[in-house]
Image (cartoon, rainbow, N blue to C red; front, side, top):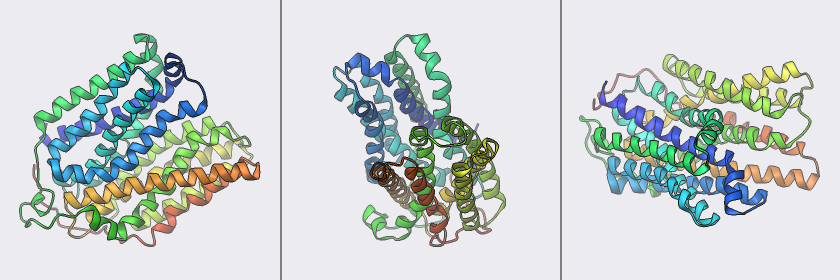
Length: 398
């Protein structure tokens, strides 16, 4: 097996295990809170909130860390932080346990940003849509695995501590594999042997680039709808079928949509039409799913909404890598801002949806806010440059 394929497997499973640990921790929250003798919904949500906070801050710090440590050490640090989630097992108090989740969250935030430069360095232009698509379902893979396996693992091991130790142990094994196969590579033009080294692209440069502020909105609408379906919709009555059923169907459809997105991005040379069409289709299907009283229509619309929600992600992730003069160092800053801004926007929208629902005393208002905000994927497509075109394959490191 080629070295680049081993590296891809390592980074994919590393992030999937991060997702597994995140979701399984939430699923075991009752047992964890019982052991720490804490109660309340607010206390229960702090575990997830800590990871979300870490992702927002960590995404921005990722480029700074990469520049100073170089790729091999930077990803090593990220993997160590994920594995450090094991420290929660020995936490004496609930706040210390939450701190362990925060540390783990920083690791996950770094890893997802490092997907970009690693893919750029090791894979050709023709290969990138496939690899980007595969990486885009790493979190869903870990999420699904956690939903299927956490209960069994908890029964087998007998305690939440043992489950966390097992997942963290698997992360550490992957780290050892990374240390064997990984290598440093130039972050500027040197990533391609026929290009000169360029001036480093800093976070300051990224903040001045309007593209870095627009691109996150192409994903923020998708992210908001995705999180709302799992975290908000089950709290709101009035759907034609149980919201939990819609959630399960949409995540399954998302896997199909991801495969379709890989095929479309590889076969169709343009990116913007894909993002634009899927943005409209996703919002339209969400509207039908939300407003219909027919269970069959609701299920059909849920499947299509999940399908069109994930289909454009490969194209969105590929756009920055195809910009003129893009380097691994610059793409790290771009994706650092991308993930951080997208999560911040989603958090603000979720807060506004909740506040409006409380003020109007009508929970369904929150659903309408999700529907309106989801159109940002379509709107942003008019401001993102078209980068997809037939190109001569680039020569990259094997």
